[in-house]
Image 1 (cartoon, rainbow, N blue to C red):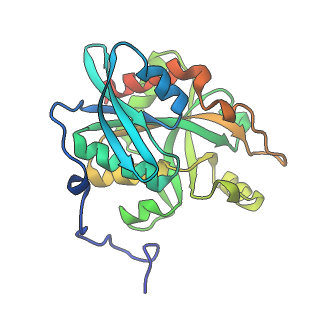
Image 2 (image 1 turned 30 degrees about the vertical axis):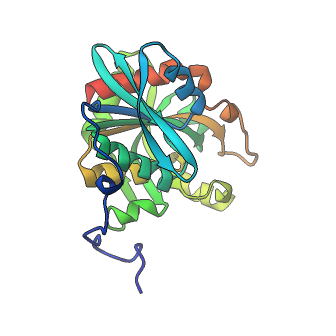
Length: 254
């Protein structure tokens, strides 16, 4: 029996789809933003201009979906769960609710500290070292980001005055199995950072035909003999406004 990693074509049709589990919502914002930091979501959901418009249901609990008004546009936002399968499931259900454009941001582990420095990272491709993406696109070592989305993100960052670097990310399924040999191999292949969702989200966005942008910011450092946690435990709260506003601007620019 061939697994998804050996199949050349994607099996169709699916027995059931997101629209079978998730109700479409009238007037759902076309733009949706998500991040993995609960601290950031709580900070913005407490604003007076924000309201809860829906919920995502899982065995892990309920995730509220909010709407905020930004520059005369309604933008939805919610908390994504960490890890490709859970992140993708939420994305699929948000599309079923009515989202047409999507922006995701979150932290990553830095592999090349010299190049990344304090730059925001623009993933131009992702190494598919996970499983979820193979259910949406045929097997390949990497998946490329949409060039238009990359250009849009780069322009937004430049216009907002933030430095950035474009490069390859390594999407892994196992945070505690980022081994020293694997890290060295990925660095030789040109990966700047490592995270757990990008390859899968790129695959789903391409499969569903959804304009998609993802940007990353460095947290812990894995590029030397000793792991450095740095500000990983802060989960992006220090620059919450900066990242969220950048995501809103990207959504408007898509």
